[in-house]
Length: 246
Image (cartoon, rainbow, N blue to C red):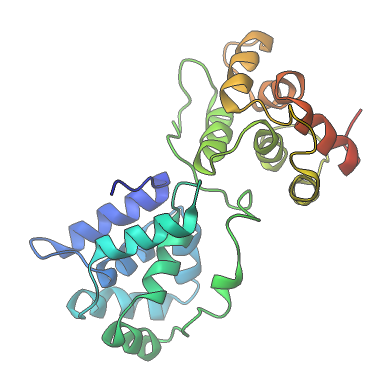
């Protein structure tokens, strides 16, 4: 089973395999990889307790735990249409840690649910500290760096034009204005699919953005406008209901 991972989750898995070395990688190695990965949401949460994170990284590689592949499959099932992110991996790792690793987590200072971390839902608040899939940090021939990040965030959640509007509004350097991405996301969840032509998809937005852009590369603002112009009824309706429409 090939598992689609966010960029950050892929780094965490690579770190886990590196820590395992010649031994089969396990869920314990995955937790070390998640703690060491610098950009994902799960790593930041684990490192909020630096002493616990350090003890975990020291002791986990020598702790018996289920195979890494098992956690990957569980994370993919939990993610659904999204690429599995670091939160999905952490969720799977904690739920299927096995007795020895569960004991270790408690001993080093982590509670079973990491103080409510697993109550957070990547399907709902994905735009906060959003993970990416296929992001080019320096930009590329079509997108500047910020626009490339927005596209990669939308791609990571299997999103379309509506998610492009939300991600653009959440971009710290997008210059979209004062539209609250949390309000947009809540509105989209409430009224999503309200018309037959609700969302034409990310590819349609990208094509339109390339046409609308008058700069050297597509910007976040270009993506935002393209989603409204060519993304179907959804982006316009979500903006209007959220109070962000013109």
